[in-house]
Length: 269
Image (cartoon, rainbow, N blue to C red):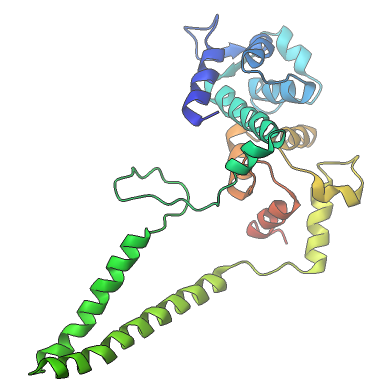
């Protein structure tokens, strides 16, 4: 489901019986999720319960919040539903190898000059832009050599070394850029650091054997559940931002490798 249609569907689920308000009763959440074809379970309801109580409710307070007429605001409803729909889309792709293959492009975004800047991804120049740039640079480097030449043969002789020097410098700059990028790359984790990250990752999956942990994916449900147990206040928006910043998966979940990068970036390793 594309972002525009996804947001429209979420808003449509939010509106029935609630056209004039900016919140939805917690008791209406199951019906709203059903209209979005999102399976309803205790973990999902707990996420919305936390949102309704300001992200400070204990893990077993869902029935109390419902009875008290608690509500979820539009912002949190949108954020949580967007993540849940991404998870459902990913599960659908896993069941359809052809669709998964069609949606498995690289993580770099190539845009032309006329495209609107949406702020996402990496922008790479097109092949034509690279060729034009090289031609302009070659022409610029060739001009001084041709000024003092009186015949075409001399001009040809002087132009060639200049062009070669230009391309040599171009390669040198590319090499320097690569070296600079590698310098900024995070250092590989040591065995003890990996073990420390694994122990922290295991806290989210207390019943999972250690040898199965690398196969697990950390989702908004897991983070919200643990935050509730620890009495930590974290909003859906903050949770989603953390997941999407470090996740390498289309559904926004984090595997063990993503979790290691997050801990390293946060200075926890």
